[in-house]
Image 1 (tube, rainbow, N blue to C red):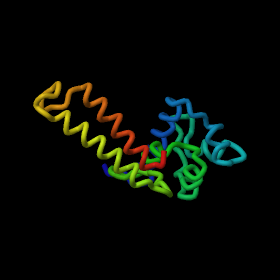
Image 2 (image 1 turned 90 degrees about the vertical axis):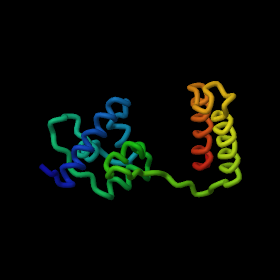
Image 3 (image 1 turned 45 degrees about the horizontal axis):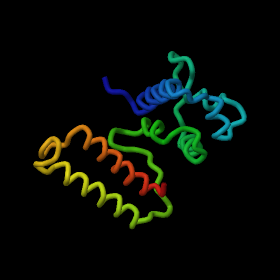
Image 4 (image 1 turned 120 degrees about the vertical axis):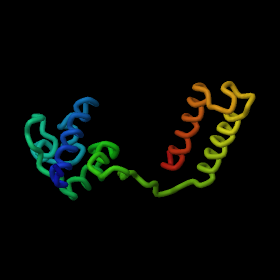
Length: 145
């Protein structure tokens, strides 16, 4: 049976609430960060009772949650179809910093694939950890941070 989009979004809102609880994100914190006077609006979208059907989150509500950093973008991305994410685009990009980070990652990656590296032409676990750290620097430099 095919679900309509409202049913899908409501189920994802329930998943967001479960993740909020797992991470210890309090409804009161979302309320205050989002600038709502009472928690009722936030609770209508992310009810504590798993059996309660949430009100469908409006685009205005999504905008407010994101604009005020009331919930992490990666959680709100759960509302979107597969393959889509909500991501903050930096206002000022330092292309030189990104290029330096990419070149450092590429240099490490090429060394990890050499026959004389710990796992030969495969990437060893220790090399993988270092490559992930370098890759994180690429992501952070793209965010201006």
